[in-house]
Length: 177
Image 1 (cartoon, helix red, strand yellow):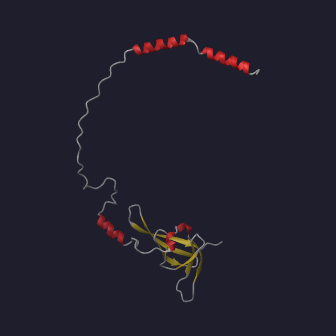
Image 2 (spheres, rainbow, N blue to C red):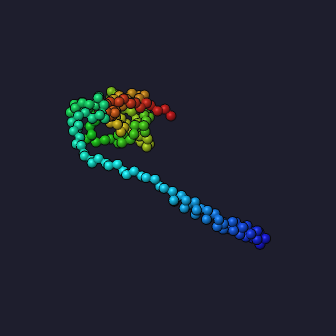
Image 3 (cartoon, rainbow, N blue to C red):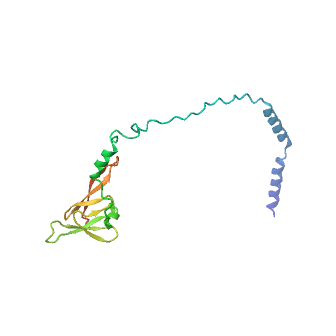
């Protein structure tokens, strides 16, 4: 109760300080003075020209957004690409659904009647697959070009920055634990 009395006294003093009518009258006088000033002349908006659309006639010209190397007939491009383009109608194997980075070579095996060894590939999910030359793996149309006891050479078919199909060589080396 002793703390309540000083708190009430302080609150009443602060509230009485906000009761000054002189300040309000001075503020109203200053507002009247500002409102009575001339606002100045504002010039009218300029007249706008009537819009007239223009037809674009350069559609048969070379696009300015294409490089000069890319500026050849689409027919020539189609025939050049068709030799390296992958077969999209071929059914994909289970190893073609797995990213290349997840695959690893864990061993190799060669029987007496085989010309080339077969590689043992871990798919990253704990399953090991046996692959030989001409098998497919990876998501970039990778085809096994060579198998040795230490590594597997894969030739991938990818598109370059111009959209042309190109061959790229990658390899999986034997992983030792």
